[in-house]
Length: 181
View 1 (cartoon, rainbow, N blue to C red):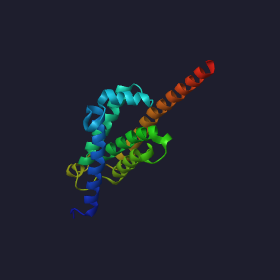
View 2 (cartoon, helix red, strand yellow):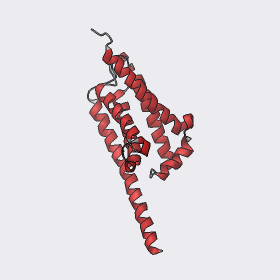
View 3 (cartoon, rainbow, N blue to C red):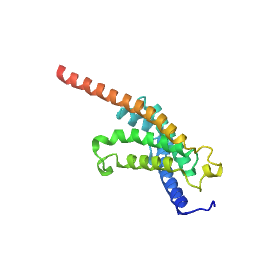
View 4 (tube, rainbow, N blue to C red):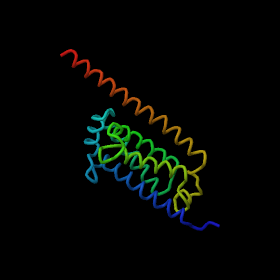
C-alpha cells in the first residue's frame, strides 16, 4: 500500500525547514536578499576568512546553498542535494570552529546543525511527499548516497585544505614580519 504516514509528513517538514533555511542563506550571498551582502560583500567576507578568490567563493557557496536548499525542499535529487549542503556547511563550520560550538559565541552550531540535517535527509530519503517519489525515485537510488558523499567529501577536503594552508602561510608571514621589526 502506498499511503502517506507520519514519517512522510515528518520528512516533508524537515525538508521544507532545512531547505528553506539553506536557500535563504544562499540568496543572501547571491542577491543580497534578507540583509545579505550579495556577491561583492560576501566575497569580501570570504577573503577575510581565507576563501580565495572571494567572489568565486561567494558564488560557489551561494549557488550550493540555494540550489541544495531548493532541491531538498522539493525532495528532488535528495542524495546529491543533501551531500552538497553538508559540504557547504562543513566549509562554513570550518570558519567558526575557533569560536567553539555555540552560535552565541560565533561558534559552528548553526552550520553543523544544518549539515547534519541535510545529511540525515540524504541518507533517509525524501519520503513519499516529494518530487523524487513522483518520478519513481529516479534521482534517489541507494548507490547515489555513498557516491554523492564521496564526491562531496573530496571537494570539501580540497577547498578547506587550501584555505587552511593559506591561513597558515599568512600567519607565518605575519610572524616573520614581527621578528623583522
